[in-house]
Length: 543
Image (tube, rainbow, N blue to C red; front, side, top):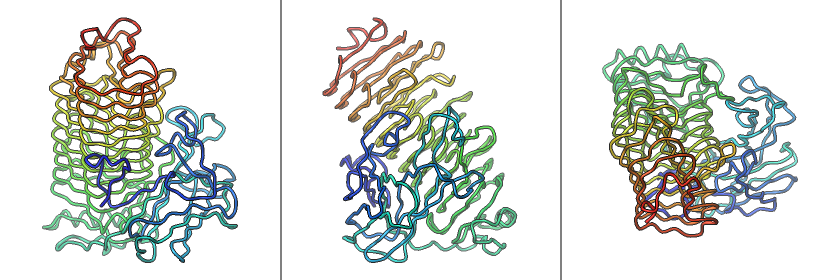
């Protein structure tokens, strides 16, 4: 097992079964693209803000692998032009890139169906609209055998690789575990006529298998190895039900299939959900997994969710656990704890390229209470924040690694936006690492850590910001804004190193009571404290 991060913050971020190589790790004869943090530029959406471009036949990227591997994932961008196919009902450009592992040759299929959006929120695939963004997607391939440490891996643009260019941001390698077998007493969906071609709709077969699983003593439905397309929502209204697979590389549900849960003690384990979303449609589409009133004790373990609107949208379901999951290339949140979610844990997950907050807690209408966000890695959300809390009380956000926010977001955001229930109790944000965080929002600069207050939505909680490491912030270290009250913030024993503007920036007419103790602050470009309206921070606060 390895950490996603490469900065040696060993106590932060998710522990994962894959090893990541960023563009800076590549040997190549292509072109290293210039770093950028400007919204709608390609490298602004890169983890590490770098990519290598292969645009000429014969150009390559090579790595000497530091661990064994039998599977690879490549984060890539190709141009949205010369559409030669239709995927998920949208015109797309489809091509390949050649992969060599040792002496063996493989072909990586690539397309633009799930990348390249245009226009304003909530985006479009219409190329006539201005403002192109979401440039990247990922392709994953299980190889024919396991290669030892030290094997050379090469990505090469050859004569039959037809894209004008390939921009490669990162490469993940891993060893895929042996496929899991169904547990004794589980209902195997294979016995209900599933068609393993990734195209034939298996909804009825899947539903019939589920109905029999609910009647069985084990109450478990097993998804066998294969790719199974299904097109509808599966309603999980029953209690004590488990949906399991043979592994995230082996059992794949493709298409519009989603799970809507109102039952208690429902579990999802060990499979992949590859949706066919190409745009964000908030009214029409739900999350890959979504709960409604009645759900309790939802468990999600070892899932891989890609190309859906949301990974998991959790309404009401207290005592939820999400652990060991990876979410990639979504069109909204990775996970959102929404409407009265209590005593829930989001732990040891990997979120990359979400289209809204990577992890959110939103107390809309009903209060969230007592939730824990720990040991997660959130990379390059192409909208909004890595981790956000909107209202609620008694939350802990700790030991997470977050990086490379792109637009309208911070690494960590504590916000009264979206009309939440009041903040209350104690909110602890500690021992997190934030790298290259902060972004633009229209004309505003947002800090790596962002406190937003809104008139009539005061934050009267005891907020403790302690022992966090904030590196290379795009703008401020801490940004405080709004017309509400931030009453009890303590900033204690944090390390801020590298801010393009201020350590702390307080704007608008926010009314704040902030205590600073024993923080290390260096390499800021402007004033340490900016308080232009004479409101908010006082001399006493700044001692």
